[in-house]
Length: 388
Image (cartoon, rainbow, N blue to C red; front, side, top):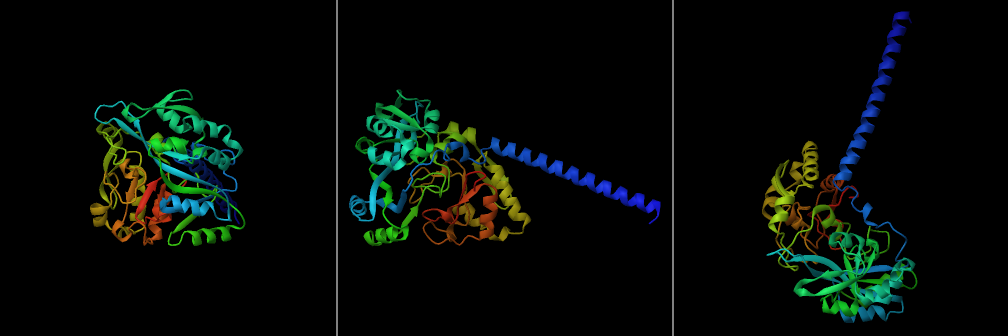
C-alpha cells in the first residue's frame, strides 16, 4: 500500500470514529431530552405514587367478578375451608363539596372495609390504620394533597356533612383509592357494594381458585396477587382516579354518579387538533401529542387500514361525556385521556379482535390497552405514561 493510500485509509477511520462519537453523544442528548420532556408530561406516572412502597398485602389474593359480590356470595367464600381470612372491599364515590357555584361537587373514589381485617391484610406497614378507619376517614397521600388536608382537619361533603381526617397513608395502602373508612361508617356514605375480596387462602393457589369457582358457579372470577399490578385494587393497569386528577386536573361537577366537567376546567385542559389517520380529535392537551405520535407511526408503517375511522367518529372518540355501560368509576373519557378505536368490532366484555400491531404502537406511546382489563374492552386505550 502506498503512503497516499495509507493516509487515505487512516483519514477514513478517523472520520468514522468522529461520526460514531457524534452520533453517540447526539443519541445520549436526545434520550436525556426525551426523558426530561416525558417527566414533565407525567411519563412513568405510577412511579411517584408510592405504589412501590414497603411490602404489603403479603399472602393475600384479590378476587374479582364483574358486578361485585352479594352478601350471600361473600359468606360462602368466608365459610370455605380454603379461606383463612377475608375482607370484602366496598367501593363507591363520595361527593366532596367543591365550593363552586353551579358545579358544587367533586367525585372522590372511596372504599369501606372492616377495619381490623383490612389492617391485618395490609400487614405490619398498616401501623394504626385500624383505629384510624374506625374513628373517621383515612386519605391517601395524593388525595390529601389534592384536598389540602391533613390529620385533624375535616373533609367537607355535599349537604353540609363533614368527616374528620384521622389518617393519611401511602397510596398503595388504600389500593390507590382516595379515601377509606370503616364498614359501619361506609353505610352512611352508601359504600355498600362489595366490589372485590381480599382473601388469604389456605393451600395451593390452583386448589383455592377451583374451590371458589365451585362455590360461585356461573361467575367469571379473576384472581390477582400483590405485585402483578402497580396497585392491588379492583381496577386495571391504569391510573387510579387520584393520579388522574393530579396529572390532568380535578374538575367540579353537578353529579357524582353522572359527572360532567365544569366549563372552566374544559377550557383550561381540553384542546382540538388534527391527528394523522383520525382527523380532528378533542382530547386533553397533554395527551394529544402522544396520540398524534402513535397515529403517525401507524401511518408510516402503512397500517392506516387497521383503524376504522368512520367507526371512530361515530362511536369512538377521545373526550366524551356519554355514560358507558358498566362504568363503576368516572370514565377517563371525561378527562380526554382515553381513546376508543374500532369500538363496534371490539365491544366491552367480549374477546378482543384488535390487531396486535395497533396495540403495540399505542403502548409504545403510553396507552394501556383495555383488552387486558379485568373485563376486556378491546377498543379502549387509556394513557398511563411510559409503563404501558
